[in-house]
Structure formats: structure tokens, C-alpha cells
Amino acid sequence: MTHTIELADALRQIPMAAPPHSVWPHVQAHLPKRQRRIMPWALAASTVLALALWQLGSGPASVPAQSPALATVPATQDVSQLMTQSAALEPVFYSAQDDAISSATVIAANLNLEDQIARIDTQLAAQPEPDTALTLWQQRVNLLSQGIQLNQFNAYTNAHGKNYDLALASLN
Image 1 (cartoon, rainbow, N blue to C red):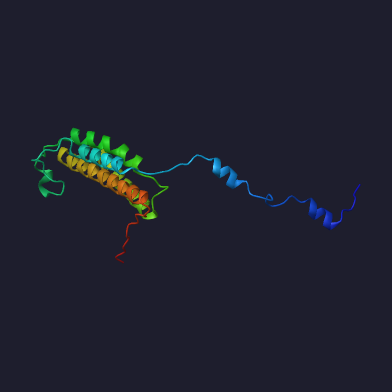
Image 2 (cartoon, rainbow, N blue to C red):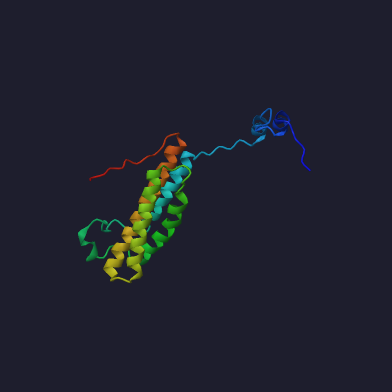
């Protein structure tokens, strides 16, 4: 059995879209204050730690990674030292990434570094000659260090209220 309802009565029965007054200011006043700040000393300490890990095992007589003679002249670092450095730097690199505070270009730069590291890992999986392996491990450690520096600087600039946005250029 159907019964008719006046339009005005039907509209009055529809619930309001919003409460008559907002309770958010009351809720917000009772929320704990949360500050996300990176203390300068913590940033400095992590940078020093990353540099210490980077220098771990490299002596004053080591050959720079850019040297063309690197493949023929053994450096003071051996592959096992570079593998240890890489293992120590990799979790630091990934934990330093924070997409919540990163610009799109910083995220893209991180993805580019991850792609380069993946290509090196593919080459290392093929078990190259010892000289080539040494060069690849040095490149891997260099890329991880660059990524750590990028993300630490991004966090530092964000903590100071600025956005670290890399300039992208096209040569087309």
C-alpha cells in the first residue's frame, strides 16, 4: 500500500549535508602537537656517517673512480671492501627517501639512480672479470652515495621550509 508524502515533508526528512556546527576545532585542540623537524645535528651526523662509510677502506693511494687506468691498476680497495660499503650504504639510501616531502624531480632522480644500480647489479650477476667487477662496485657505491646526498639535502631544505626541486633540462 502506498501513501503519498508532500514534497516539503520529504525534503525536511533528508539528513543535513553537514552538522550544524563543526566539531573539528574541538577535536583538533585535543590532538597532540606533532612537529616533523630534522635537527641540524642529526643531519650532520648522518652525513658524517655516510662519508665515513664511503671512506671505509679507501686510503690516500687509492685511484679515483674517474681514472681510465682504474681497470688495469688495482686500487687499494678490493671488491670485498666495496661490497661492504655498498651493503652499508644501500639501506641508508632507501631509508633517506621520503616521497611525502620530495618533489617529482627528486623522486625521478631517485628512480633514475635505482635504475642505474639495477643495471650494474645485472652486470655483476654475470660475474665479470675482476677488473670490471671492481669498476662496477665502485660505480655502485658512487651512485648510492649520490642518492644519499640528494635525499639528505632534500630533507634539509624541506625542514627549512623550502622545496628542493631539481632543474630539468631537455636538449631536444
